[in-house]
Structure formats: C-alpha cells, structure tokens
Image (cartoon, rainbow, N blue to C red; front, side):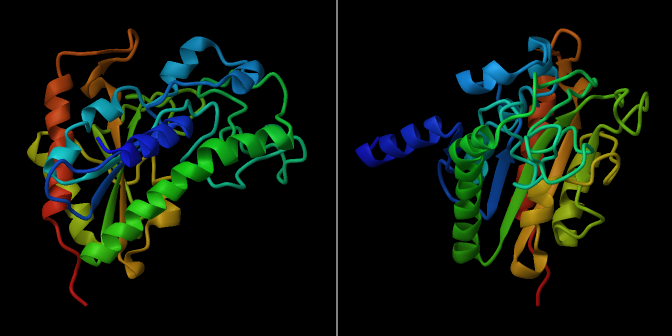
Length: 287
C-alpha cells in the first residue's frame, strides 16, 4: 500500500468512515451504508442517555458485512462507522429542533433528525439538548467528511461513465415498532425506497425488484420507507445520478432479540450481492 493511500485511510478512520474501491474493474455503482456503525466518541458519550442496547437495536447491524463483496463485482463501498446517536448521516444538515439542539430552528417535532433525542422505542437519547458548538463539532468531524466522500465517488462515476448509481443499504425491524406509523405490522422482506420512483430511473428500480423476487423475497416499494437524505438529496436522474435505498427486514439475516447472525445470513448476503450485480448490469434510459 502506498504512503498516500495509508494517509487517506487514516483520515477516513478519523472521520468515522471507510471507503473501499473495487478490486478489479470499476462500475458506476456505489454501495453506501451509513448506519452500521457503533462507535461513540467521548464528547458524544457524555451527552448520551440511550441505553447501551439501543446502540445496537437502532443500528443497521451487519449490513456492511452483507455487502462486503460489492467491491469484487465492481462497486465502491462507503461505510459509516460512527453510531447514528453521534450524528445521523441519512438526515439533512439542518434537520434539528429545539429538543435536540439548543436554539434549534424548529418546534419539538423531529425526535430522530440529525441528532436523535429519542430512541426508536421512545426512550430519551440525550440527557439535554446539545450546544451549538457540539453540533458543529459532530457535523465538521463526521457528517461533512462523509458526504464529501460520497459526493467525490458520485462525481467520479458520472465523469467516467456518464452516470452513477447509489445503493443505500439499510435494515429495518421486521415488525413496526410502537413509535412507528406501522406499529405491529409485519413488513415485507425488501423495501426499495425511491420516493415514488423519482430518485432513480425505472431500469435501476426494476432491476432491484427483479433480483429480490428471483431470490424468493417479498417486496414493497416505499412502504414504510421512501428513502432518507441520500435518496432525496442525491437522487437526481435528470443529472445522471440514481439512488435506490434498500431496507432489509432483519429477520432475513439475524436473530432480532439476540442481535446475532442467523442461519440465513449467507443466503441474504448472496441476495445483497445479487442486488449490486443487477444494478451493475442495468443501464439508464437513452436520451
């Protein structure tokens, strides 16, 4: 490894993410996994009220492992390593309220924005609202570098191939929790989120759908998740950037109580690589 690459990796590690480029031929596809991380730095830990168990239950555990072979089929990977309790990388930079940050611009209506003040189970995530200085520290150290890296990857693919495709990899509780609109609802195996098919061209959305159904998985588009910040901010088919968020029901690959991989983990990993390969093969519409 060259000294320059080692220095880049050190900077990425300090910023709480890692980038893995394809091992061989490169494609226009980027796999982005923002929520698999569990790291919490000391200043964030001092403000954290959420139980330790919530760091795991509110993370997308193992999703980076499910997609770990993506570079072998031509896709770059961008993986966030910090807990979403430090900063949520799939929220907008101004998505804060007075309950999460002192002087927040909104009324208390965004409990899980850029900074979470409530866990998914409705428990307090913060002892008190963060100061503006602490918010700025988290944004400058973790959020901004992550999105700068994603922007560089997208711009590089558009320049080289004429378009870029982002697979935003996430997971979801298999049944809607009490704080969710679909409480107690048994969710589909795979939920592609494309904001009503607006964040990506049809060939890419249909490619994911077909790959999931070929694997025997049930599919529900945009239900209950239409996509987050990555989907809404970067998904611009008219500018040759296509984003499909893929939510996986956790029952497919883990024991949701023990938080350990189950007997179907490898099968689900194969399905995830099939999603990537389908996107690599798909092409945008002409014109």
